[in-house]
Length: 244
Image 1 (tube, rainbow, N blue to C red):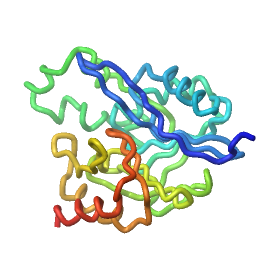
Image 2: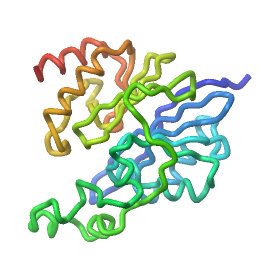
Image 3: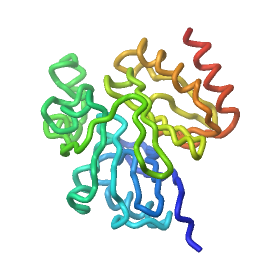
Image 4: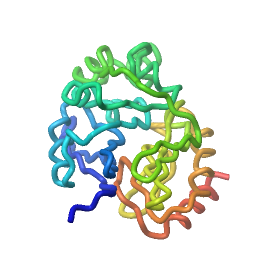
C-alpha cells in the first residue's frame, strides 16, 4: 500500500560555470496533496518533475510551493512550475521577500546598483541577464514567524533572517525535521554556520541560529549539503556557542 504521508529530500544536480552543484529542495506530501520547498535555478523544472516522480509524487498532486528566500537558486524554476500547474498551486513566502519574488524590486544579491562596478562586470553574461530579468511569480500568501501551515501534519514557519531579510526555515514537528534553507549548510554530515560571502547580515544570521537550536529535531535538510542526521542538537548548540 502506498504511503500517504512522507518527506523526501530531492537532489537537483547541475553544471554551472564549469562546476557541478547540487541543490536540495524538499517534498512533503499527505493524502491532500504535495508541497515543494524551493525550486532550483531556471531550467530545472523537468529535473524537479523527475525527482518527484521517483518519490512517487506527480506534478498533478502539487498544491503549494514554499520559497525560503529570494536567491536565484531557490526561485529559479518557480515561474515554469506555475505555468505548468496553473492556479491550483499556491505560493508562500515571507512578507519581506514578496516584492523581490514578484519583481517589484531587483533581487538584492544581483542588483547592479548595490554592487561595485568591478564585481558587476566580472559576472558571467548569463548571470547579468538573469539579474536584469529575474524569475518572477505572484505570491498568494505571506508568512509570519511561528505560523503553521496545514500540510503534511503541520509545517511551522521559523523566521531566520540574515542570509536575506525575509529568510525562513520550516519545522516539521511530526517528523522532527528542520528544512533549513540557507540558514545553515552541511558538509560531510557536519553542520556549518552562515557563510559570510553569501550572507547579507551576519549578526542577524547568527542570532537566527538560537531559534534553530531550541527545536526538537533529529535531522536537518540543508539546501546546500543535504541531509544531516547525526547529533543534530549537539551540532546546533555548538554553532550557537561559537557565535555567542
